[in-house]
Length: 321
Image (tube, rainbow, N blue to C red; front, side, top):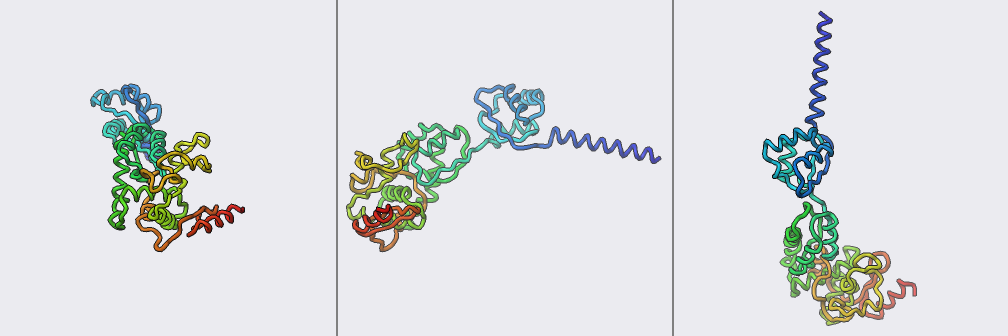
């Protein structure tokens, strides 16, 4: 009797182990894996790819299901976030309906110009850089491409990317114009805010920097803002970057409507895409702040002056002259 009980327990143990093994092998999903299906790939090629990635167990079974369900032509191209050892029907449905589409996480930094954004998009395979820039320029959207983190799928139409970014601008920045009434136009505010964005390092200085530029603007003085020259210069080949460091005297003489060392008033438009903080600073500058000059003090902060004489003295002290 004890022998039969022992054999029964042994058989049940083997059966349980077998069920567990089958479930683990065929039905337990494993680690995440990204799969890229290219345009024009056949069902056979997709099956081979999925098998190689460990998403499916059997190419033959997957191809049979594709044929039976008529899904051969419904598989979309793109990158998909799947898991190893996923049931075939689930894999097919996921690719067909796009629910497992891979989205690239793209972060646009505050103060980037549209070209920098375009390059970031192209680098991640989201959209064509040249098409993106052409649309931005045609619609005059520099300054309205809200800097933030977005999720975009591969080969997203550039207009759709732009709509997403300008949509965030409408949500985050546009309401500020109602909160802080101003005699400046929206474009003027964005243009000044873009300069403040490129100048400011410390958040609490933005209202002061904005006040300086507003003081100069209303007095009819040239803004003499380095970032406007950097924008006009474009891509610095020697530095392999935008926003050239260490402007020279020759740079400051550049003949460009964006050069605020040569031209009185504001440049033709924004030089970058500013943050909410910089727009707020222009709309709500430091009150009763009559400084007309500032210079970086090598710590990320600035020293502000009311007169040119004070300004030159601060420069000598900071530079050790």
